[in-house]
Image (cartoon, rainbow, N blue to C red; front, side, top):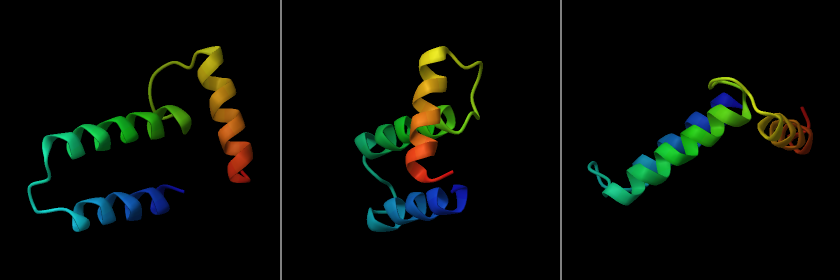
Length: 62
């Protein structure tokens, strides 16, 4: 999954100018934050996060 994520991230920046607009950078940061939460890469997990992550991973077929 991380490989797929990195590919999408690369595509995002390839598709924009070499200096993407601030809004694009904000969206990218937000997406990275959610990716980290979903895959358990950031901080302690709340019950809500755990359920969200479990549901998303199940939907992902993992």
